[in-house]
Structure formats: C-alpha cells, structure tokens
Image (cartoon, rainbow, N blue to C red):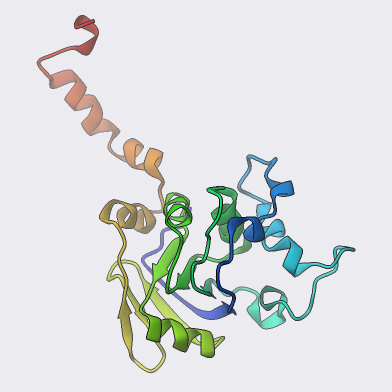
Length: 198
C-alpha cells in the first residue's frame, strides 16, 4: 500500500446514489483472493458492453479520467454486502480516495484496512464536487481536510489508528510488525507467563 498523507488530483465524478458493492464488483469476480489485477472488474457491468467493449459515456472510461486518483460518488456509496473486493478493485484501478456525503460503514472500514481513503464531507461541499467534475482538490489525511480550488476547506473524520496506517502505508499486520521489538520486549519482561496458567 502507498503512504498517503496528502493527495492532490482532479476528480472523477460518479453522480449515482446508493451504489452497492455488487455494482462496484459483480459477484462473478469474487473467486479471486488476489488484490492485484482486480481493477479490471471495477464497475464491470457499467464500464463494458456485453462484448467487453468500453462504454464511452461511463465516467471512468473517459480519456481525461485516466490517472485521476479521487472519485466523487453519490450519497450512500458502498452499501450492500461486506465484500472486501470492492475497495480492492477501486484501489487497483488507481483511485486512492472516495469522497461522498455518506459512505456505508462496512465499506468504509474495509477501505481503511486496504489503503483506500473514505472521505465523508458536508452536503454543500459534496454538491459542489458533484457539480464540478474534474476539479483539482487535495485530500489531506494528516490534517483531515479536503481543500477545494476556491480555497474553501471541508473537514472529515478518520479514526486515529486507521489514519496512522494510511499515512504509513501499512495494514494492521504491518503495524504489528512495526512494533515487533516492543512486543518481544513486553513478552520477555512481563512477570507472568500465560503458558503456566493453564
């Protein structure tokens, strides 16, 4: 996972409410356990026709959308089932942050665990972003701010541990490995031994 402290990008706008995880990654793609390569199935039923050709009018297929790292989505993004493949696909496609006025809790947690930044902003900021596709904005994870081109700033919340992991580019296992020396020191210095208390 990449370290993300500040991310500046033009936006891709998907102005659809209640996008569920089956629309993000259709169920037929859930057989893989690999994160890499799954980006091709992102919004597969919306991005491609029945013959596998890209649909030119879908926002993620637009030539100018290539390389953009911030997706502005409609309200209640990521609802539905808890499939972790949804944030995997978004991340593998190259998107690093999703902004909405409402993001489903399980999708939000799965995103944070997989390096994707879920950003919930106020309704006015969200409306402005939806109405101004391609605007260059900054998502500042360190400051928990979204900065708009006109200088306006919207704040967002992110749990401190998840924020630390996003900024360090690690998951929960990576955090434990970062602190392995402290864990081993604790185990050596404690006065009790759980294996003797069974």
